[in-house]
Image 1 (cartoon, rainbow, N blue to C red):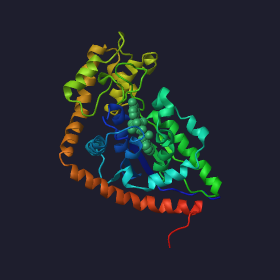
Image 2 (cartoon, rainbow, N blue to C red):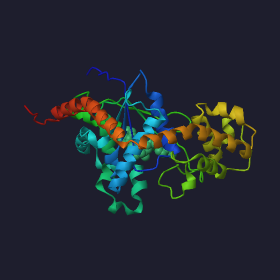
Image 3 (cartoon, rainbow, N blue to C red):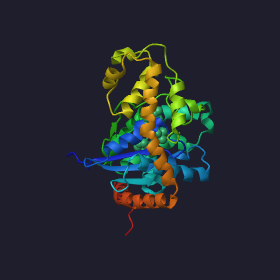
Image 4 (cartoon, helix red, strand yellow):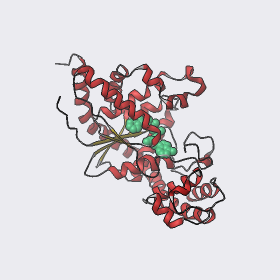
Length: 340
Ligand code: TYM
């Protein structure tokens, strides 16, 4: 079979389940902005259908979807250059998701660590949607024939499943239809850790608000959380190997590197030898200078929710120009009678 060439296209999504963190910003949104340009067509999605795999208050879900959209735009996603959508307005995601439910195997799904983490001890009471979630995620990506997906480290296994689904669908039906999507997990901050415990991921669901920086935190809150961040008593090293066994130090350095668009080596060359007492104010100042303008722009955009809704409707029309033909072709491949 001849290799099909696919348009270079980026897709990624974030759950509108409330409270964007510095982890979401550095691991995802900032990198979405970097990928916007001439090389790729870019599509960014508020995955509202994913969010309801765990209970969401309806009024909060609407608010959080708009706020996430405001966050994308405030951080530099241009709704003209990129397609911005909420998932439920592009029905082909869920439609292809069903096909993929029939391609993915139970054994593959049972290996998903995120389901185990999220369902916890109470797996029997988790929703069926939470279990099937990664097949819908594969559909989000493949309904655009996306070639590249920027995400944080925690999504790696889901992207492997996406490739497994494409790698089963294509030969099952004797086609070369879905691409082998490349995960793009790059940069210093692919896994931002909790400020209170360097072995745990920074997460909006952590009960301690001091463990994370929220995109809506004001300058005082950011500075306070960084001042109180857990550290060790030693000075910062000048080389990367000096960070071994020092997860909290590594995390703060990674955050500094990602916020300042430098490599970890460059940062250590600058701050090596300093005590945390001197480094933390530098980090706080940098974080406030980068995040402050984003959070105030988010608040400004949230004053006009109708404009956000218009952006999302326009985005869905553009998205469906891509997704409707890909879904129809999938149905043809699978053997679904088409309308005449
Ligand atoms: P979600 O909403 O949990 O997270 C959104 C993005 O933020 C990244 N991220 C982090 N990166 C670094 N450090 C952290 N502490 C951190 N916390 C979160 C995540 O890796 C992710 O990139 N299943 C996805 C949403 C999704 C999706 C998709 C992503 C649905 N369909 C299709 C890509 C393509 C999720 O729950 O992400």
